Image (cartoon, rainbow, N blue to C red; front, side, top):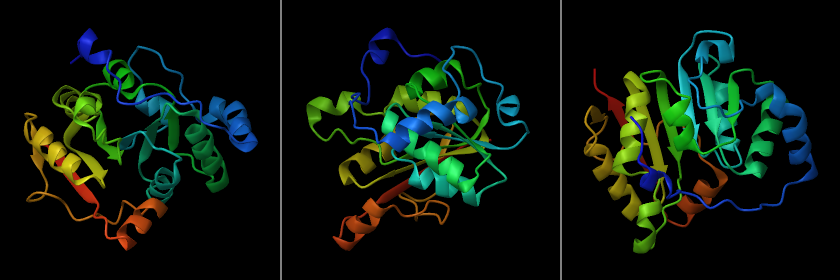
Length: 227
């Protein structure tokens, strides 16, 4: 499926000129040729990209990459494709890839919806992770939310049968919004009765631990593509 021009004119993020450290800049310059994939509007051969045939999990918006690197390191039997638009986060994850000696991680620095639409073949992904997307809490900004029916249907179309989409948020109103949106997408089924218990495969972030100490709940939502 594809999105209309009007839908694509509204982005779920605002590009910021975030300050990059010298180490992050060096990582982008020296490691992106090894672990990065340039955006091209043509389908990606995932097996050729990773040099093997294995389940592929895509993450949208990995931030500074700590959780991504941890998940990647503890699941060497899977390949991971991370999408992020902000350069400091890309540089940070590249440094972690090198430090941990990870071989099952690749990065695309581009808009995730463009990548899903043109680069990811239908029914090709074992899973999609979207952890702590911007909740855009003001009502007038809800149109910017990444989780909406059209984009979620696009994500679902890229899942293999029994593939999953796992979303986590610490914004309760957004959590209920996400549940409603996912329930509206044909072919997706909730893996729990409402919210899911956080699976061990999603490690706690420093931000999340601090929020839990302050009594802020985190909501995990996991849906699967029906067979």
